[in-house]
Length: 254
Image (tube, rainbow, N blue to C red; front, top):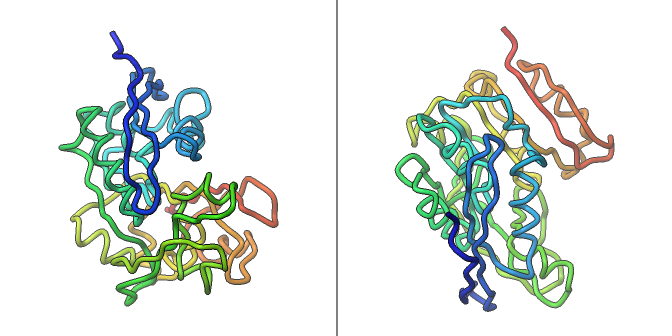
C-alpha cells in the first residue's frame, strides 16, 4: 500500500518551493519514495535514474560499498541501499538544500543507517575549500535548474545572473576515502566539471576507485578523450558526443 502524494512548502534560502512526495521503482523493482521540489528539474533527475531509465546503469551491479559524487537528491545512492540491504553508501553533495533532502529521502526509505552524506565537494589533493554556485534567479531555465550547483574548480565565475555562492569543504580522493574509512567497489561521479580536478591525483589514489561511471564535462579546455589519458590506469569507455558532456565508464586494469 502506497500513501497518497503529499505536498508542503520548503524554504530554499532565497525562494519558497512546493515540495511533493512520490513513488518510483528501483531497477530491482522495489518501491522508492522521494521528496522533491516542484517546478525544478528534481523530478527529471530522479526519474532518469530509476526504473527502466537507469541512467547510471545500476541494473546488474551489486555494490557493497558505493560512492556517489554529485548526489543531488540521492536518486542513485539511495536506490542502491534499497536494492542491496548489505550495501554501505557515501553520497557527496555540496549544495546544503540538496544534502538536507538526501537525508530526508534516506530516512523516508529507511536506509539512513547505511547512507552517509558528506556535505561538501571533491577536488584535487591539497585543496580544502571551493566555491559552489547555485540558486540562479532571473532566468526561467536557470531557475528550473537552480539546485544544480557549479564549482569554482570548473568555472572561473558564476556568471552575471543573480545566484547564491558558498564556500564548502573540499576533499581529494585519498582524503575522502580516508575520512570516511571506505573502499568503494563502485563509484558514480557527475559533478558539473569538478571531475577533472578530482581525478588529477596520484595514480595510487585513482587506483582506489576500481569502477567509475558518470559524466564528463567540457570545462577548463578539456576534450572528452582527455579522460582516457588522465585515467591511464583504467580502461575508459566514452559514450556520447566528442564535444561533451559525455557519459563514461572506467574499470581499473589488472
